[in-house]
Length: 305
Ligand SMILES: C[S@@+](CC[C@H](N)C(=O)[O-])C[C@H]1O[C@@H](n2cnc3c(N)ncnc32)[C@H](O)[C@@H]1O
Image 1 (tube, rainbow, N blue to C red):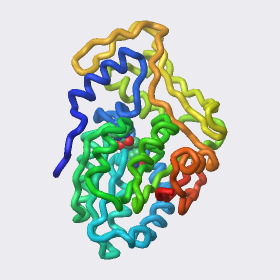
Image 2: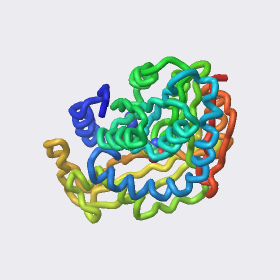
Image 3: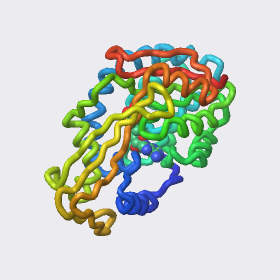
Image 4: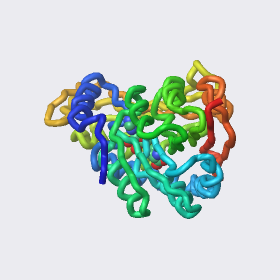
């Protein structure tokens, strides 16, 4: 298994300590420990079900979409996770007689290993890239694994884990003439009622640091983002009910009673806001848009405008 490392485990561990000290945990730490990965897999099973029809449809179109690609098709998945959706596309390309090379890009070593192993089980060559996709430099280096035309995937509402106005611009910079980007977003559908799986997932980095559920309260707050009509942010935060000591990367970090830690946020979108971000804001052209069977996800196939 080949994995190229732009972001080391030591860098992630150091950044995790700094983030806990700053009381603000970015998205990548929610997929880092075995506990987080277990919670993520339990949570994602439901969205995999909801997205099945979308991905069967996309897989059926994959060979057609990439007809102009000559030779091996580079498939670069940004925030690949364990790559289950990506594999549908890779398998469809193989069935259509096309050769693909898979480049899952993720900060999580374990998820990258799963993504590479899954592709290799399907006889597809894979090179994992361990990188921080919030870094424009890492995105550029990941894109440089191949020249255009490339097929990019950024799915599972990965965009919603970052500031979407900044992140989509960084991603769009990597999309050149001939490239295709398949990207999805979670639709905002009114009141937020977090499931037990969601709570476990959000709490998992704290649990891995020795915090117990009754050490404090977990709060989900949804509000519109004033920068764009139809854009909503769900923040998740933990407030300590007693003095705590978090054990992170062999360091003890105190958290006083009443203090809050901001956990990862999630952006949700109206279909119009998502389309505006892709087109007017990031300069892409949407060639196809697919709404999932349950209406919770929209997936767009984009090219450079
Ligand atoms: C919401 S999951 C989506 C995973 C997968 N694409 C799917 O559809 O199931 C987001 C993925 O992005 C990765 N990720 C989060 N922040 C990241 C960062 N800053 N750099 C690289 N990967 C990151 C996580 O490890 C996780 O695998």
